[in-house]
Length: 279
Ligand SMILES: Nc1ncnc2c1ncn2[C@@H]1O[C@H](COP(=O)(O)OP(=O)(O)O)[C@@H](O)[C@H]1O
Ligand SMILES: [Mg+2]
Image 1 (cartoon, rainbow, N blue to C red):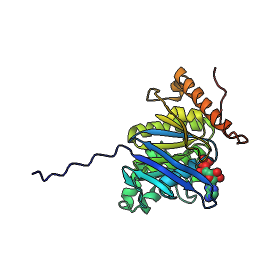
Image 2: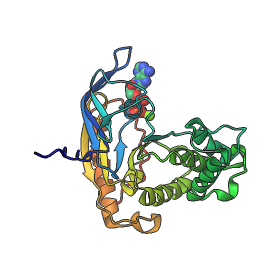
Image 3: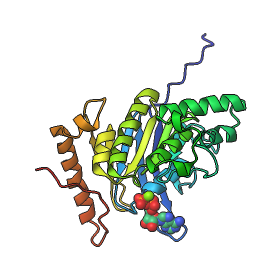
Image 4: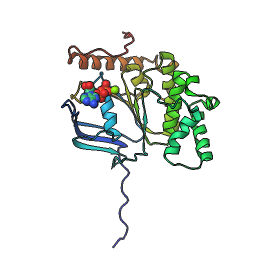
């Protein structure tokens, strides 16, 4: 007779949403039996028109909203209020204007009660270094460009070492040059830290450049319209990847999917940044 209990298998999915339904209090239904999952370390981009439920999905994943039906799991377990496994990066950096870059990054560690002040400073500095901002540690947010502020915000989230990163159009407010550079940056960091990433965007090129898989959402409550596996080689760089014929093929295919989604919603506002298609 063996007294050894079998080892539990590690969860296959870092993140899973199973048959969730969700409506706002005014009755507006956003999800009806919606399912989505991501493997550990997978980079998934979610692409969909304005109002299709992208932010609502992240709110359900972070536990900020609860589905009326279905389950949300992170690393094989229901989400918990403390959710230290989850990191959230918003569209706006949301930094405290009176705190230096370093103190903004340390803030999360302070709130989490991690280590001594000295240890928190060292850790904050190492994450500022990771996002290329060690030299700007003492500057206030107003002394930083929009891209640099977003890097501080990213460092603040990363310093808590989440295994799952939820990003809601984090670079949408940046100019195209800063956005492309942040796209490279986030891939470099992801390759180093290996988190599972769910990245919301309405930019087709950004989705193709970053993701292993792009999930296209329908107008709410339509669920998933289509999924596209992006098998572009890594590491990816702006100079090389964006001009690969395969990159343009993926982008054109997604453009067709999005057009299909938009065609189902007459009167919907076209919100896509859509650089001209290359034939
Ligand atoms: N608090 C709310 N009450 C009612 N409806 C809401 C609320 N928040 C968002 N919605 C609606 O739910 C839908 C999904 O919103 P959202 O998740 O923000 O979309 P997205 O991020 O894809 O643009 C939209 O139609 C939006 O108007
Ligand atoms: Mg949104």
